Length: 241
Image (cartoon, rainbow, N blue to C red; front, side, top):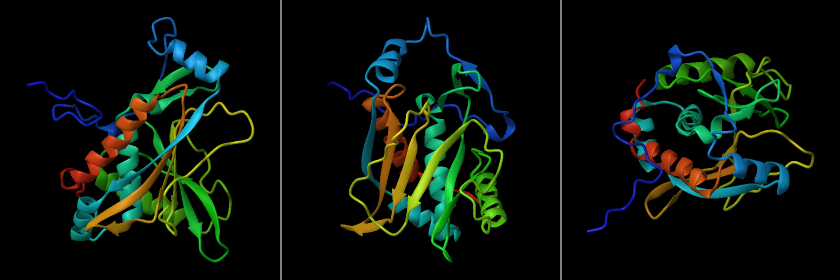
């Protein structure tokens, strides 16, 4: 009998790296040995390509566990996404301040908070930890600290290792497009999620990822989305507070 190949999920024996005990490390890529060198040059220099992919994530189990714990959904979803990103090196690639291409050992979430009084938003970033309780506390503390700062960048000194995450909690969208008019060297993904909804007895979360093709193909993006789904399905294994 032919077995299906392993594709885009956490392997049970995968070692969990305790990020809370780590310092951010930028490792330059040896371009002469990098298996992706030709693909990067093609999609970054010759045919500059970025793409969007949208998928409904089944968060039924995640919501069940969240309700049992009595915790907030937004920090929980930020953890879900950031942890999956940190398990995939393709989405931790960037240029450093000297223009050297490399890979960070982890990224921190850079996310949006909404000001209900004037309907504006601000960007905030928080320290990442693979320990959910630590991560959750970091998010709540930073959201409270910067909730009244009416600036696009509410928290200063955003580190170079980050992942952009934003929410559209007013709409259960079917698709989402993202682009910038000017040239950009940004290689990190930009991830949005919308208003979750119920369908056929399941709770679904619209998720859209904006990817620079230079660092990630369809396989890598599908793996990222599959990892997010896997984490949601197994929320009881990590959602402890």
